[in-house]
Every structure is written in C-alpha cells, then in structure tokens.
Length: 335
Image (cartoon, rainbow, N blue to C red; front, side):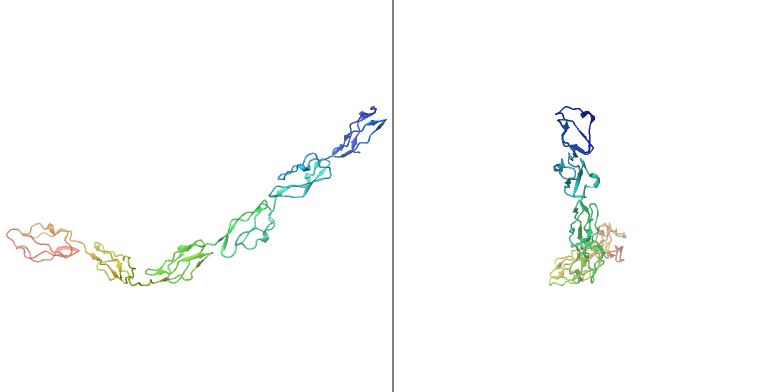
C-alpha cells in the first residue's frame, strides 16, 4: 500500500532484497527480502517531519524534530509574542504552516496602571501597536500616549494641571503674568503702592489658592517712619511709609542738587535738601569796575564784592536776582 513496486525485482534470488519506492509523504518500513520464492512483508508508512518547524519569533523547537505524522508540536513563542494556535501539526513529513500557526506580537491583557488616571479597564485587551485613550482625575492632565507593545504597556502620566486663569484678591494688581504657573509653584502677589502682600498665590492642580491672600498696609513699628515732610525743590512725592533702616528716594527738580540721604532711623528721617543751581554765568559788566569773573560759581543768594577802579568807591554789592537769573538787581555802583 502506498508503494510503487519496481519491475526490476522480478526473478531475484532467494535472500536478496528489493528496494521499494513509496508514494510522496510515505517512507518504507523496511526492504522486502526474497525468502523461498516469497517476499517478506514491508510497508510504506506516513513520513515523519525530520526537522523542527521554522516559526518566526518562536523559541527553541528542536524537540519537535522527527515528529511522527499526525503529531503536534506545541509552539513556544519568545517573550512579547503569543501563538495564534497552540500547536502546529506534522502531516506526512510536512509541517502544516497553512493552518496559520505563528507567533504574533502579544496583546496587552492586563489593566494598565497610570497614577491619577480614571478607570482603565476598558483598555483590556489592546492589540500590540494600538493605543488606548485615557482620562485623568480632576486637576490632572494626560501627558503622553497610552500604547501597547508586545504585551507591555508604556508609561504615560497624569501630570498636575497648570493654572491657566489669573488669580485675584482684594487690593491686588493685575496678575495675568501668573497664567501658566506649574502646579506646586508660587506666583508672587503684586500690590498697589504702599501695600504689602500677606501671602503669595500657590497653584495647586490647575487652581490658585487665594485663601489668605490680600494686600494690606504695613504695620507700623516704633522705629518706622510715617509720612516724610515735603522737601522744597523736590519733584517726587515724599514717602508715605518707610521701615527703619530703609531710604526714601528723593529726586530734585531739574538743575537742583540733592544734599543728604532721606534714611529712616528710629522713627525720623535724616536731613535732606534740594539746592538750586549756582550762578555759573558771567556777571554783566559795570562802569568803572574791575573784572567780575570772581563772581562766577557763587551759590544762590550769595553776594559778590565789587572792586572799583582807582578813584572810585563801591557804593553797594551786586546780588543775583534768583538762581535762574544772572542779571543783577540795580543798586549802588562805582562812583
């Protein structure tokens, strides 16, 4: 059965053997031998699968070598892959690859773990290479994509939300510069002039903590200074409050010079003054008077002595009209 008997075996001597040829997929159990005019029994049996199957991404399958026809080789896929069928069959010396038995990337069968994420049970199962949409708890936002690769989930996160709305509180200035502050970070409170913040704004999971944040007038200490008296010739408003040891900035009118520093010490400001400019121009010439260049550079309200020519007497002194006028006030002259 399943054999093709060659004609060349006819008339062979007793004790001789005759090779038989089996149909494709069969192998002879032995060669028939001529004994006393009769051939011994021989069969063509289904062929074995001599070599192990070759399956991409599988583990070692050498144990499946010489598998009898009808036997099955259990697929052992390497880590990250799973078999489409548990085994592959041997049929008359051929592995049955046509059944579709192979190792494919493994799906993710476990519920992924993402801290601060909503329920992720709907992500099971997810084929390898696919993604699963996920939502985060209130105050958190997703960072990254949740995807499956060869049976393993990647590691996206739910990150605390940034604060995307400006905070507000009593007596606080425009705080739009705080937009985009990361969770856990502070945004310094800006107060109007003369007020100080009681606390700073803190961003927490997308919202600013405003409790306890306001702008208030600073508490006076015994060594602090209250309002500074006006300074003649100063263009800046005097300070309404200065801590002890701090300086109140004073700026004089154009052309005037500042003397001293307005420092608060033990409740009082140190002396400070604004002086008008000196008379730097030339004095107008006078009849019968000598060179008057010595009068240049005199301070405001200072006098300049008159030196008359021989035979003349000084009958007065020349006094500048104001710090802003170099013309002398008419008075006594050299006579």
